[in-house]
Image (tube, rainbow over all chains, first blue to last red; front, side, top):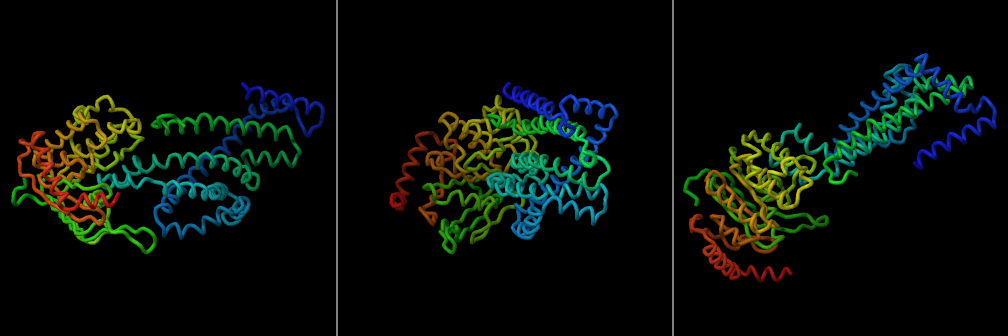
Length: 245
Length: 253
């Protein structure tokens, strides 16, 4: 209830400010809604959103699976950890923009470069979190797996992954938030489609209505993904806990 | 009873086992321990807490290879183990906990039947993390037995269970022992329990534990009623205290 009131208050504030300013720099909610409908009707908005979403999914999948394997290896083996750590430090401290520019210059202005750049930005974060989770794995259960000779795949599925689940959930959550934002930058710099591209063009035309329309659509999609995808998956993974966290 | 020429399962000779404490320093917890186990024999390890009984089991199970000595285990050995804590997969159901072990061992058997036998029928689909400690201990015991082991290592499996359940599970262990197909090592605090179940008892001393007394129980298991057991246990306790064990125990307090 309080949330809803707060949201209504934002809308009212926006309307008042837009009316008072009476400037193309701050369009009111109605103008933005009109643009939203128009862009949806022409299928431009769904198309650009889909482009962005696909990039997010691809980058997320690559960063997560690679991060899981690398993080696990670094958590398990001291040697791998020592070899990987300097790389990790470099990647963690490399500004996203530098990665993006280097990827476009070395790989070319194409989809591979775009997705690789985003994945590479997210990767070190997943690695760090999974490494932490791997170090916290129970040696007691490791003993059980060894004594009962539980084969590798079954061990990973029943013993290791459930223990890593909370760490993975944290990595995925923060990961999605980061990836959404970086994908837009990648699109702005070197892609001919996607929300980032549209925002870039609108910026050069000072087209505030389009900027507002796409931003709001983008935020809405993020919320839908969060509520319909991320949260149910987390709830399912936590079913066994006596009181769901 | 051990029959001469019975199939050998486990030969353990621990000259010394030490744990590193601070850098450079280490504490010796075991010295000169020999353990031989054949199919059908039942050995109990008895001693004060912290004397290294669990370390012996870990070495026997192959979980700890950092010791001076030798370990030989029969290639045919199929190991079932009950740890001091239940060590179940909290995020899997009771049924799945047992199935995972059975599948790994390619064991056949009806999980439902096992659970009924140990009064766990209603818990079948519960997550292991939701069980009481007593229930979890029973699941751990079922997990070890359900894979049809011929070598069982039991680390105080019946501790903290209420008396009636403990008595029943002792009966189950006795049945396993009497089948003659399994070699068992039991770590216990309970001298009566050790006398009731085992063929051979090893008494361990305090820190840097050595075997201070080794005894065969010659009364056949079927004749070990409560009175015989407690009489024997008393006799052994007296022998042990002669071996200065009690003094050592007092020193440690």
